[in-house]
Length: 468
Ligand code: ADP
Image: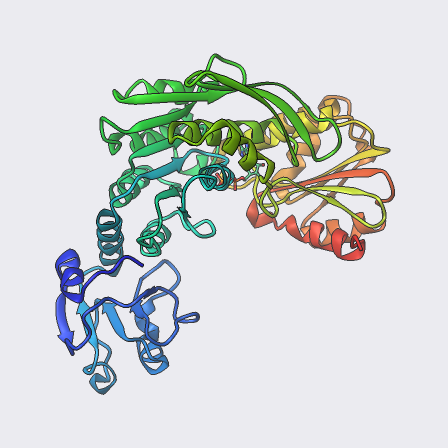
């Protein structure tokens, strides 16, 4: 953590200082009473389903060395011997501290937003930058009004560059997050029907993503997807340096001639405009969507002076994250494409397109969970996804969750036989069904929104058929 004195913390948060003033430095921050370690400073956040103030006495007994809260713990004997910062709003206080740490650290920070691929792009970008710099990246998917400032409070003096993701499901959130982290550069991945329930239309989602540009300084660089028309329109608003990336259109970093050679592997050619160089690479994952994340990472790395050789070294080390596109080889010689972390109509479209290009399997099976937060268009968006299924070469479709019935309906509209479709209310039942039916040479895609818990299908299949 960047060193912040108690005095600086009081100033940054506008807190009233209570308790002892013996400590000079703000201790490392904890926002979770369950994982708090003795000697940490506990910030009592209030969320929709919890209030950290309910645990104040516990954390004091556990040895919290300082407290940031908006109500005093009743038993004064527990806290008068240590600093207590009394603030009006503890979330704002955490954000003020995060922002203070970020400014004191003072080095380049790259913020990523977009509907899909934030975490993967963050991971890839950090891996390529990591060939030259000591990189900080947000832990896990800490990308909201709590997670982002908490991430900033994990920065260390030795970090030379930071890559953070900004998530949102409502308008105004990206603006607030970018103010907290003060980016020097931003990556805009794409705009798609994610959290559509909270927006009137896709245009409004784009506007919300575009808030990141408002807080990009004029000398800051915007990295943006050249193939997404909504993103390119947003990019026009940034007057500073811009670098585009993509597959279809002319771009600062463009990937083409990609092919999926063996399952779970791709090779591609990439061209970088400035400085002008090209390269050929092979990566241990497959899917057109991944190439956008790779192209974005290459664009950032090149802009920050990572050499061609270092980029190539970094590419060789890229791996998909768990549940986000890993190919798993089971001991019964079936292959699972585990994309169970999340789903939305566009991501599903892209992944189904990739499934259609995969060859060499005895049978292709799709296990698709419903996609949530799509609002009134949900049924139609599921149906549209289903219409694509006959082009994938799949011979069995397993759907999970109520809205996924519309996927099945869309598939049937395009001639997919109803006797090759099985529907289940939950993923455990789907796992039961599938576990006895997959065998050597089978390929199975598992994908669905987080809430559908399609990861249970993967866990069952891989638990049963563990690769030795
Ligand atoms: P996010 O952090 O934005 O939720 P992730 O990197 O965690 O995105 O990926 C979640 C899922 O989104 C992946 O499993 C994949 O299906 C899809 N995805 C990832 N990157 C892209 C992309 N560039 N375009 C379309 N879909 C993507």
